[in-house]
Image 1 (cartoon, one colour):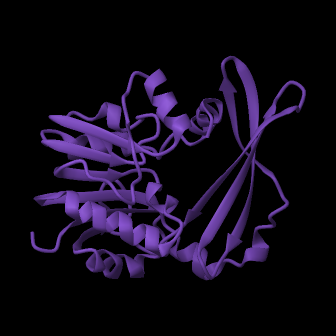
Image 2 (spheres, helix red, strand yellow):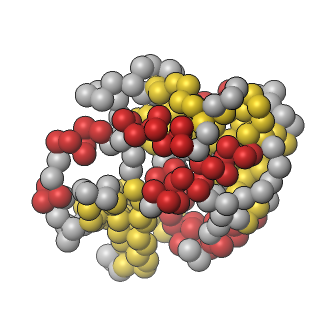
Length: 243
């Protein structure tokens, strides 16, 4: 992304309710904390630990982080060597940005190498089980833009529309966002964001292959048990398999 695109993206994708407070509680009193896919530092900049490092590969997000006064490390969440951490976090569905199973396995292997013996990996994402089982691609026409947000960018009111393509066998979703000025309907930007969602049944095996063990699977930041028929989110905690 360019810095302008990153700014527009961040105005729409501003986190899940309660996520910052949740990660603050986890990080309080920790030694070293690493956030993967930190963006402009929305979460990482709010954590109270001895050392907090944010990692991101997107040039626009890195520039936006600098503009917010947060210094992020440029790097790839699939392969990084930044030392040992007590806590590695991937907030706000960032784990779904790994759009192939090979990418996901590489990331988890890097996390395993980075975790201290009692370290934890924690991530949250939207729950996809019910959507995957009950929906069909034709339920989501890829040429239908729907209004999803009304934002203000540097004093200019904008309307944000989204249309998505969904490949069910690969669990790949590509969301297209169109940003239009509210005053005259002029389209000022378009962004495409791709992700690959996970099903809860595959979490434990995926983690195990990377040398990690699933500790808890919650359906909210308050620790409610995950229920496929009801939960809108997954909150996953994993540890090293030798912990």
